[in-house]
Length: 320
Image (cartoon, rainbow, N blue to C red):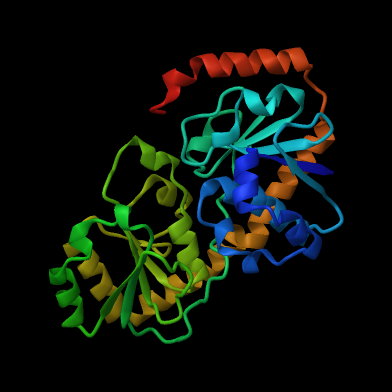
């Protein structure tokens, strides 16, 4: 099986000039450098190749460049899908990420199963956070609540002094991590909230929830589309939409150790589907299926025609 990552030359030179060395080392994807998981363009392409090279070493021939190859499965991020990569040359697999819809590709990978229900789209979860250091304590006490994410997405009311003080009065510390997204060692509960609630939320992945399971903690969050799409029961996460509701949910866990224990056990169960190895298996099955179907089921002319049509109507799809 031949897998070819397609990207812009300046992007490769700026971030992944040493990529061949990492491939040759068959580096454990949980130990990859920081640049591979801060930014979707590297996560969906180069991290995918590194992970498959690690878990299926010797079964995949890896290459990368600025144009598609006719003899390989060409994987690229939505930002790099355009005429400059000559997508009509061969089979294209495009990771949509949180961008507008992809039109004209052979296969489109979605990070939300609800969106992936549309024909021609395939759901594969985003890669879990590499290098996560899970919760060390195994008891059910609640001492630390944490937010992991970007500063521009965390609502002010959840990091206010008033909210921190309410928690402090219960012996609970609020830790806000805008830069370090890996250290869950002293964390008992994670919270996840966003400033905006628009149509773009449907494009977002359930990464914070999955990373919370990986960190062996319990999640309290807004009921975002991607979270809701993979939710099995209340044990996956508790819903809160305001600081008052979040505080009540935290106290519910503090006062009900059995519920906390059940939610942690549920998280371990869910990782059977959303762990790094499980995500790698999804990607491998997709590429294996493409390989079995054949790389030349459509002519170059048909691919070029479909790409041109997609490019023409793309401005009409910005909000979907």
